[in-house]
Length: 305
Image (cartoon, rainbow, N blue to C red; front, top):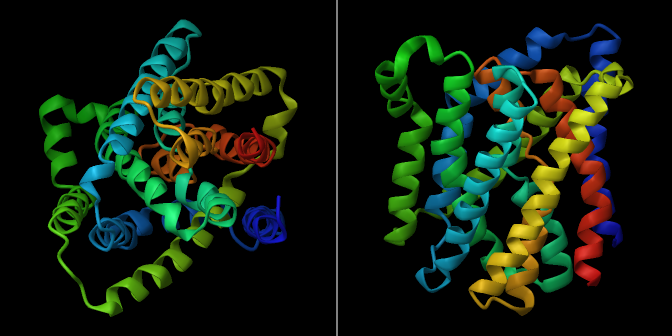
């Protein structure tokens, strides 16, 4: 791991610990984290989702990358659901596991590695793969976790209406349209996307730290649950990535990018979903932190293979 990657990861963990110690010192509490995440869902995240898709030229020739991403995430969601049911997870824990397996930290975690080892020009593979990841996150994963969480009481019809009216869905739809049609936005919007991301990501990681409970790791049952979940999120994921890249004949750097993306940790967005839908927030925070530690070990191994 080069110095730049190490510094990025150190910064992420520093933000998590800032949140944790701020709570320990009683400067802020969990209610602050929950309100902050709800605020992000109201406007900043929809704007970022729109700009992320609208300012990225979607290369149709690389269309197989989002398809592979969607296939992998779909299989992981199904596996997570049946394993969760087999182990008799309650709906909140099951919803959190599905959120974690359905949303990987491709941009925050994988991007610096890919940029450092394979160059900026090969980030196009990552962006196309993440396009599928984003589509799954804000449609299928959001809908399922909502149903397992606080949207179930709405019923299927009202739940779908609530989902369709969500500002995130409009942001995703128009962002994809702009990206596919290659509609040029003024340079200001590209800079604003960078600034907005620089605001959202730190706040999310601080919120993870606030919700993180290290006592959670002391329970044998919780540790078993974390190892099992990490095995699905990272282990099964990378095996599926290798299988499908082989089936579709993707080799070289393109295959490496998909493998690195697949072995990336659960995204911080899984915590945001857990707060938004009233799922198991302590499990979500612990799983994100746990898989990040594993990712620091596994991603360099993928690069060296």
